[in-house]
Image (cartoon, rainbow, N blue to C red):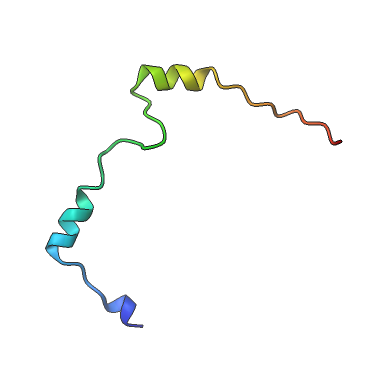
Amino acid sequence: MDVLDSRLTEDEMNRIATLDTGASSMFDDRDPESVSWLGNVRFDTCHQAA
């Protein structure tokens, strides 16, 4: 159970903090091209069993 007794150093915490860019890596709702693309995506939800 030593895993639960671990601590991160200040340097490790600072390095982790730099990973958060505040932007989604999947979809940026502030980017007009991304919003336009998503607005034109169509999903076929009516599948018939073969």
